[in-house]
Amino acid sequence: MAATIVFIVLAAILIGAALGVITARNPVHAALFLVLAFVTSAGLWLLLEAEFLALVLVLVYVGAVMVLFLFVVMMLDIDSITLRQGFVRYAPLGVVVAVIVLLEIGYVVWTQKLGVTFGTPLPHPAAFSNTRELGNVIYTSYAYPFEIAAVILLVGIIAAITLTLRRRSGTRHQDPAKQVRVSAKRDRIRIVKMPSERKPGGGSP
Image (cartoon, rainbow, N blue to C red; front, side, top):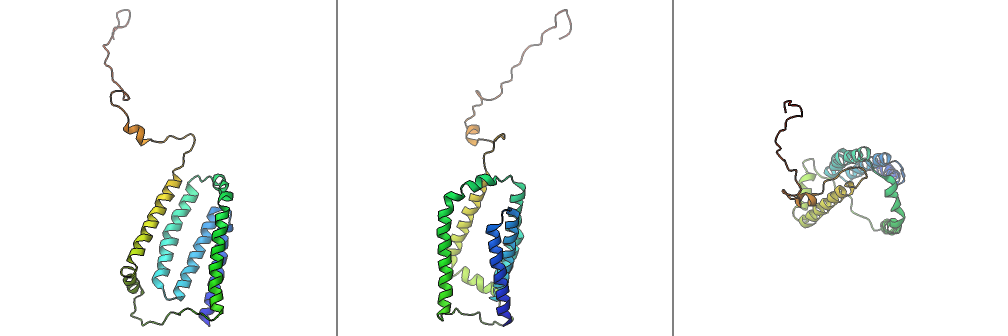
């Protein structure tokens, strides 16, 4: 009974935080709502006896990723007006994704209502290592999906770096292609040695 109450409280907080992420106008507030969503999600993982995933969610996402995200939001000059211009263009795609997610949630709720239940975690002895079991499963049965997920994360990192490299007016940027095409004889500075001349009137040079 206590676990059910804790689950309901955490789930309510998680839903509220998720709504705050997508409705907050201030990017910093949205990031803080996302931190709250991660922490409550970690609590749900603890209820499922997945301690390793809960700790990773807090340490990696809250402690590292979200800090970097806040640095990016507060230190970079993000043009929010330009970002909002593409909202209307991508709105239909967002609606389709939202409808698919709602259908999936409705399917899960409906199947449980019909009596289809999912297995609850079994109690384990004190010497049981959740981390060891997770590692055995990932690096044996799911080795290829794990590598594919790593490649997808790498693509996401490259995309994030590309989005930050925007062209701004009034700033100078290096063009590697032009630097490679530079000719040492034509485009470099040429030092010319000129003989000294005496000043008019017999003065020293």
